[in-house]
Image 1 (cartoon, helix red, strand yellow):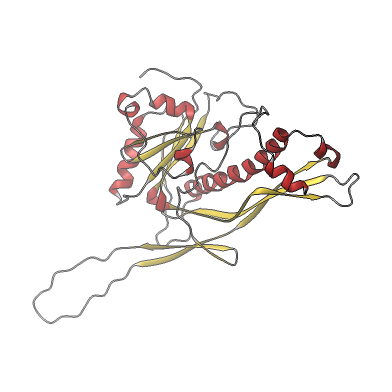
Image 2: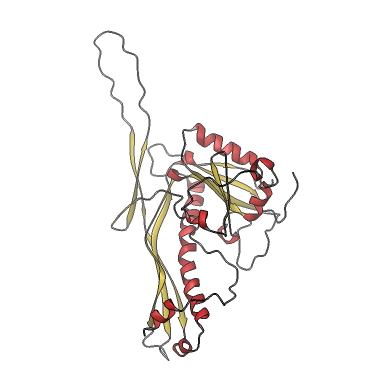
Length: 309
C-alpha cells in the first residue's frame, strides 16, 4: 500500500494538538473574480445616471455614462512542507498520521483567511488605486477605547447610507465579542446569515447578527494588524496597545483561490539520506479591496478582560 494512502485512511482523534485555528473560516464572505492567466479580474461599475426635465421643445439629448473599471490583482502561489523520517512511517500510530495531515490542511485554510484579512488591511491603508473615483475606506477609533456597539452602529449607518444592502461581516477577537455580550440588545440576537458558510458550521466561531451585520469571533491568531498584533505563543492581549479589525460588505472585497490543495502530497525525498518523506500542500490565489464605501477599519483597545457596561 502506498504511504500516502496509508496516511489518508487511518484517522483517529487520539493526539493532543496545541490549540490553533482550523482556518477557512472566512470562505464565502467575499465575491469571486475571474482568473485569466494568473491575473484575477473584478469588474466594478460606478457613477450614476440622473434624469432631467424635458422643456417641451425639441432639444438635444444629454447622454450620460457610468464608470466601468476593471480591478485586477496578480495571483500569488504558496506552499508548505513538512518531512517525516521514512523509518518512522512504520512506527507512527494512526492518530499521529492524522495529526500531521490535519496540520498541513490547516496551513492552507489559515492562509486563505490571511489573504482576505491582508487585503482588507492594505485597502484601509492604501485605498483604491484602480477606480475612476479613488478613495480610502473610513476608519473609526484611535485605539484607546474599549469596543462597544456605537462603532458598529456608525459603520453600518455609513454603509447603508451609501446604498449598501448586502451581507456585511465584522471579524473580531473573542474578547471583543464577549465584551459586546454585555449589551443586552446584542446578547439577545442570533446569527441570521448563510448557514452553509464554514463560519456558520464551525464550533470555533461565535457569531451573531445585529443591525444586518454578522459579528464573527475568530481565534486570536487571525488578528495581525495594529500595535497589539498577535504573536506565536501569546496567551493574552496587551491592553496598552490596539488592534485593527475590519467590517465589510460581501461585494466590497474580492477574493479568488483557484488552487487550494488541503490534502497533502507525500513523496520520498530522493537524494537525502534515508529517503525522508516530503509532505507538501499548495495554494494559489489573491484578494483585493473593491468598494471603499463598503469597508470600514475599526481600531480599538486590545482588551484582556471583560468589563461591565
